[in-house]
Length: 398
Image (cartoon, rainbow, N blue to C red; front, side, top):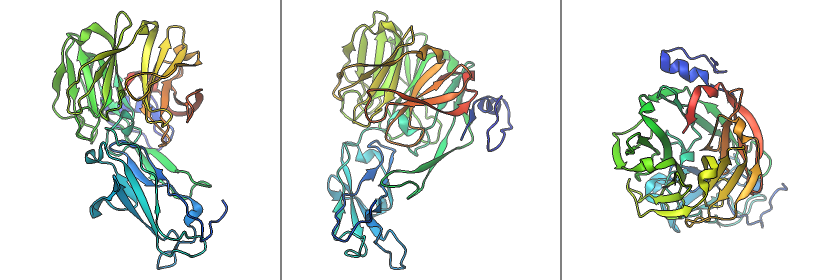
């Protein structure tokens, strides 16, 4: 049994299982410079946006003489958001879905050396999409693993991120991540042979789970935004014709989350979500996928706005299948071999709280390590970490 570096957990069985997986915890601008502000964050409901810190505003001063004397104004489709949503950060809400967000920066002392003149406007975000799996389970937009044990319990590992302005040189986001205390958020889930997260499936802004039982019934467990669940509802039957069902996120580019399912013949089928907990008409989007013994959905790995899917074959070769953002595919890419050594590989978001998602893998020692494609998706970088130890006690990561 592992121990958290911050403190040991003492409780009953749920805490004991939770303890088994441990956590490792420019040149100055002048007055005539007109920078373009950059928004830091990802365009999904539940994410938090902020101005990416840079040194272009070093000369702007608050009335008390302190630096960073600017005010921000957040816009949706070019129009200012209500006053109650203005501030240093902006939490993306379900009402923002389908819109583009932008930001105006108003210097308080325009014309000072190192303070731009006038007001600067950022570029708009991509159209806001439904909350993806990467947004976590506690409505904070965070990387938060959810693990299922072999006896059917669900253990949540919440994570908190703190923003440090100017913690690195040049324009960059800087976050410090720390683990909250894990907790059991479900039991009896061993009645299901497939459990996965589609992200937010019913349109309320909180991430959900879908689960299939042995009879082929598919159930939606709506998330409550606090790591728990509202009452389940059946959203399908006859799903036992599929041997793999996964949640890629928004595969067809309509802003709502979808499901991919593979049958025994290797056919891959898209079941588009309608954004309200139901379905649009399915269509086949692939053939020959029976050669893969695991299909992994990473979300948007390279921040190009389209989701990415990975396939691992029985010999351990990993291939990336980028989607085109419209329900089809770009050219697949070979990323390496040796992936059969991992007991679990999953896409859960970004442990570094960046715009580039990662794959997490559990190695033979039970260490939880991460891999990333970065901006290119032409290669896989890693391993990084470990960010945890003892994770081989779990059946799967969701």
